[in-house]
Length: 566
Image (cartoon, rainbow, N blue to C red; front, side, top):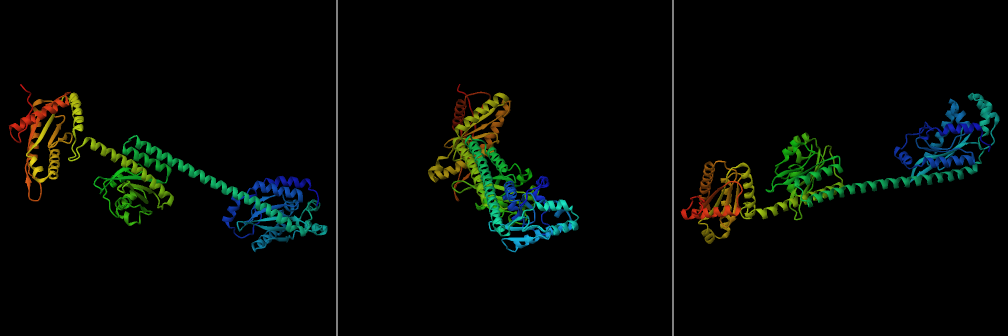
């Protein structure tokens, strides 16, 4: 082998400036398997291979390259000057180089594990396949060497034919090494093994990096989900309003899954209709149209989920039978998929639905379905907490039999009425009502029938007054009516109270059906008190009670105004 000339070093600098991936090494190969090529490119550490190949060149003076199945140079050492400056610079000799490349590549494609080609330019190339995970992904080439001393006459004639400068061309050929052909298989095997090991290590590292990235992504997503859960649980424990909790939940879920629109619907107390809970990203017109829809099989995704208690997946709204009556609504909202999860409490009772909408047709993954169930559970906690709070308030402030305000709530409303009267200088009125002839109902028909009658009395009282007024059950068959903000004039205020009292007498005097054959008629005694501004609750109730007993002594169904003792 001869020493490398200064021309070779200058050419090396030029070649190293080229992008190996853009070098068209072989223009005549079949269309590549892009999946395999991409796999190689993703796995390969080019810098390490380039260093390995360059070191081999320095030791053996034999160029080396790794070339993909499309003929692209992925990694290489410098090339022989005879090839770069001469053979690949003119048409006839370049064609011979391409023939050499093509013949080597095709031999390897036919399953050969080693091929050699004596180029018609006078130099020799050889190659071996690189197999990764059982796939032929690239070829390792070594070449531009001689198997014996060059024939000066042959190369002088080639220089003349191609128009090369004879002296420079022969000097370049003198730099080409002479390699013992018997050693070629061992050389290729060693280089292929090294290249494959580097590639395999790169592939393992690439897979590790991808796995690490996916793990970090999952950790981030899980952290975000736990943050969401903690925020919602904090809001629930702090007693935040249900509307605010559900809005927060839906907003955060949409941030975690930007491709989705979320909705929470609440099942009404009647157990038949769905009410708007939270859906900030859906159009107001859509939410208004859905509010109050009656549940049932085939009533969209949410109506069906609430009715059946099962998850409903509609991946294509335009073709699904559940959505045919609501296609115009879906088009207005620009949604094409809806997955609805029923919100159930611990006893399995449906409280509402948690729905995920997509603007495109979409099918949920098993992982996303599990997440939707988690979000549904958070919604259930918020709804159940709200219902429990409402139930506790109802037990604390309302009569369980009639649903009317109890003494505690009555006193609260009395204080509010006094404060409002102090500001407006309008009179308020208090009525103390006691049923006459109620005891025989319990004695003859039983307490259950008596309870039914009291519940009917409560209903009639509520129809006789304004919504702003308060009707309370004081105990047994005694009721209180609080009339707020009547008038600033005493006479008109008394007239209003008198009219309301007469209306109550008429309502309560109507017969009460007890069973299929029996009716019962009750009279009532009503005590009236007119007040304005700040006063004492207990004193007002005492006065109204006194007036009621005065009415009893005066005769049934005759309201009586409180008169202070003389």
